[in-house]
Each structure stands twice: as structure tokens, then as C-alpha cells.
Length: 44
Image 1 (cartoon, rainbow, N blue to C red):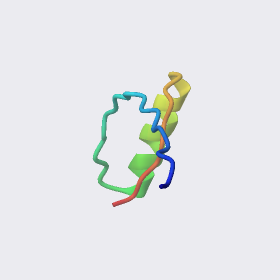
Image 2 (cartoon, one colour; image 1 turned 30 degrees about the vertical axis):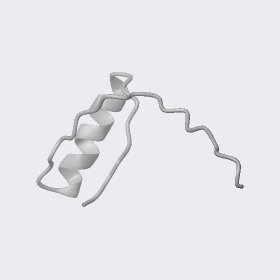
Image 3 (tube, one colour; image 1 turned 180 degrees about the vertical axis):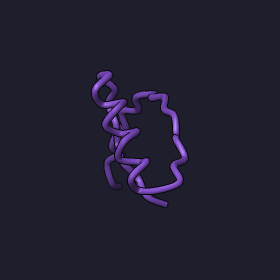
């Protein structure tokens, strides 16, 4: 029987900002980054 691997889940919270353009996305990202936020860029 295969050994079960434990999944270590860490709860996280986030906010999604909807931008009209890639330029706006870049500006928002840079502004939030300057304020010290941990960020991830996504495109959907």
C-alpha cells in the first residue's frame, strides 16, 4: 500500500486588482511592491 504524504497547508489571504491594461497592471504592481507587499502577477 502506498504511503500517504502529508500536505502542509498554510492559510494565505490576497486581493485581486482588475486592471484595464497591461500598463496599468505594471504600475499597480510597482506601486504595491514599493510599499513592501509580496506580489504575484497573473493574466487571465
